Image (cartoon, rainbow, N blue to C red):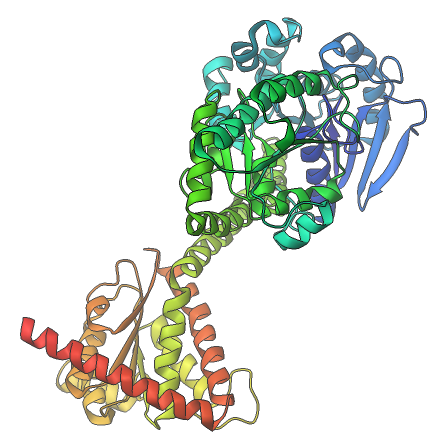
Length: 639
C-alpha cells in the first residue's frame, strides 16, 4: 500500500484562520483531505510557506499528518498574487526536504504549487497530481483588470497540465475548462469534488443555534459566509436582500460572516468598507450584520441558525460553503456558475440564479419564505445530497484510488493490482448507489410490507414464499428467520413455508405437468384466504411466480412482491411491490437481502410488542383485506 504523500500548498495552510483574503476553501480542502487520507493509513506531509517567524519547521497536526513550513521569502504574510518571485526558493527548500523523505507521490494544490511539483518531478522523477482550485484563463475572463496575478501564470499552467501525471477537476465545469482552455487530455482528468466533515457540520436545532448567537427566534435569517473579496459577489447578495425587504415585504436579517479579523474592520479588510457603503446605499443598515471572521467550530451554528444561505460569486471553481450549508440543513440560493451549479440541485436543494442578478435572488428568497413546506422539503433534500455525494471520507477514497492508478501506470505488478482493485471499488460503489436509491424510494413501502406480514401472523395466517435460483435461497432464508429467530430471543415461531424447499413436489409436478405451475399448485394446496404470499424475482417476470400470484389472488391471499427493474408482471399482481431501482441482477439480489433483513426486524418488533398491539394489527389487516377485496372486485369488473 502507498504510504508517503507530500501535499504542496504554497499559500493555503490548514492552520490558517479562515475568512480572510487568502484563507478559504483551498485551506479546508488541503487540511480535510490530508486528515482523511491519514485516517486511511497514509503518511501525509503538507508543505506550505512559512509566513511567520514563530512557526516551527514541522508541526504534528493530526494522526498521520504533519505540516512542514518551507522558507520562501520573508516570514510574514505575502499576498498570493505576489508569491511567484519566491517560488524558486520554495522549490529549492522543498526539494531538499523531498530528498530526505522520498515521497512516493506529490499532490500539488494551486498553480504555483504545481510549478514546484513539476520541478521536483524533473529532479527526482516523483509523479504528481494537481488540483488547481482556480484556472488563470477562466479567472482573467471574469475579473479582467481586477485579476492581479502575473501573465506568466498562463504559461506555467500550460506546462503543469502537460507534465502532471493526472489533473483533478473539482466539478464538471472545471473539467470542461481544462479541456477547452488548456488542451488537457480527458483521460488524465478526473472529477473529485471537495466536501464536508459530518463530525464538523451537521443539522442542529435552529432555536438552539439562534440562542447561541443571540438572534431572535422567529426572525427570518439569511446567511452569506466566505472570503471578503469582490469576486465572491457579496454586493449582489446584499442588493438581493434589500430587494427582498423592499419589493416583497419580507422582514428578514442578513448575516455576513468573513474577514481578516474577528471584528469587522474596513481597515484590515477593505472589501468590508465597500460592502458597508452598499448596505447604507440600499437603506438596510439596521438589518445587515457584519459578523467578522469566525473559527470552524462556530460555523455550524451560523449555518444552522439561517433559513437560507446565499452565495453569488462571479465564478467559483468549486465552493465548499454551499456544501457545508446543505450538510447543516440550510438550502442554498447560488450563482449558476462553476462548482455551485454542480453541488446545488436547482429546485431540489435550493435555486440557481444568474451571478449578477439581485432581483432573481430577492424573488427566490421570497418564494421560499412564502412556501415553508417547500423550504422544509429543500432542507431534507439538501442534507441527503450533501451526505450522499460530498463527505470528505468519500473524497479521500476517490483521491486514494487515483493515487494508486497514477503509481500503477509505471509498475506492471501494481497496474494489475490496481485493475483488480478497480473491480472491487466499482462493485462496492454500484452496490451502494443501488442501496441508497432503494432507501430513498422504498422506505414507506417496506413499512407497508412489514405491516401486511405482521398482521397476517397476528391473525394466525401463514406466509408462503417462492422464488427461483438465488431468489429460492432468499425464500428459504426469510422463512428460516421467521420460523426460528432473527434478532429477538424468546418469541414464538412464525408460520412460514418456503415453496422452494420441497424437492419432491417440485420435481414431481415439474416432470408430470410443468415447472411453470409448480408454485401455483402449492399455493392452491396450502394457501387460504388471509394468508400472505411473498414472491421474489429479480425481473418480476418469472412465469412460475407470476402464476403463483394469480392463484393467490383467486384464493383471496395478500400478495407482496420483491422485484427489480420495472417490476414486470408482478408489479400489477402484487398489492405491494418493492421494486429495486436497478436492472443489474447482482445488485438487485444484494438489495433484496437487505430488504429481507429489514422485514424480519420490523416483523419481530411487532410480534414482541405483545397481544394488545397484535389485536390492533388484526383490526388493521381486516381493513387491508377489505381494501384488497374491493380492489379485486374493481379489477374483475374492468376485465
